[in-house]
Each structure stands twice: as C-alpha cells, then as structure tokens.
Image 1 (cartoon, one colour):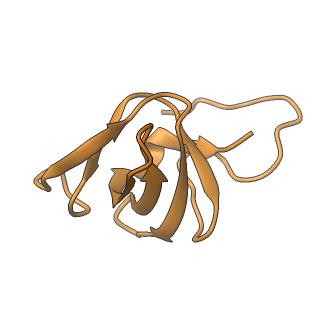
Image 2 (tube, helix red, strand yellow):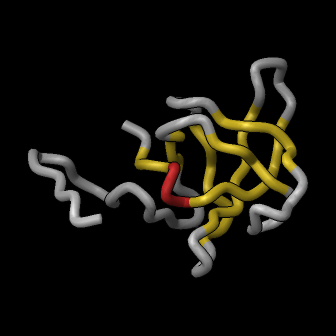
Image 3 (spheres, rainbow, N blue to C red):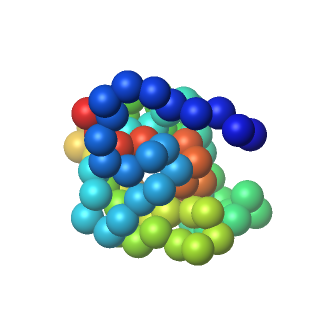
Length: 87
C-alpha cells in the first residue's frame, strides 16, 4: 500500500508503537494469547479503545494491556497495524 497522510499530524505513524505508549485501536481487532493468529483469543478491542503498549515486536505484533468496561485488566497481543497513536 502506498497510502500517504497529509496534514499536521505529529508523532508516530499508524502501525508503529513503543513500550509505554498509549495507542488507540483503529478497528475491531482480536487480542490474543501470543503474537500469532494461532493464539487463543482473550478478547477484542473496538475502534477507539485505548491500550498501553508493553512491548513492540519486530513480527508486527504488540504486547498490550487494557482495561475492559467492567474493570478487568487484560494483557495480550494485537497486530500493530490496527493501532494508532492516541489523540
């Protein structure tokens, strides 16, 4: 894809994350037990949900943590391409 973004957006491009960053899901995406589509699904993020990056993996996955609506903290893995910097 050769999509380009214009405007005065600063910070990291979508799909790039660093430990400690707060990122936002860009769509509904599964949270898995491991950095693989073979991993058990722990839950899912919906568009606009914020997560904390624990580790960004070279494989294109991020180890994340987030809190569900009922206050449960979930830790798992999502594909980094579905995350963008929180606004």
